[in-house]
Amino acid sequence: MLPKGCGMRAEHVPGAIEPLLWMSDIVAGAVRAQRLGDSRYTELLGDALIDFDVPTDC
Image (tube, rainbow, N blue to C red; front, side, top):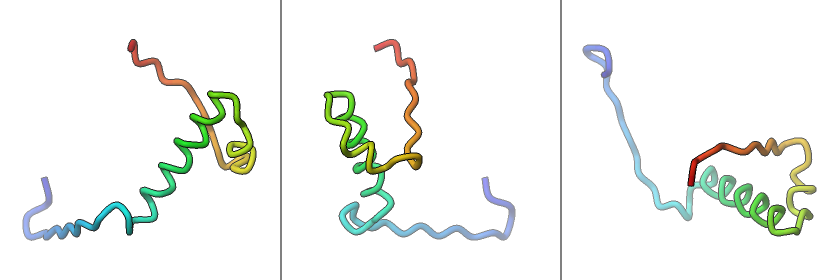
């Protein structure tokens, strides 16, 4: 809930023009490739990548 008298504005843009969505796709693809045996992309990300497992009981 916003404080009284406060306004909020939201702007929706297609995912293709939102660079922050691109980054998550790049990282997810790099981690998946690493888990399938190809670590060249995670090596490029270097220390900028922190990978940790989250138990999901799936």
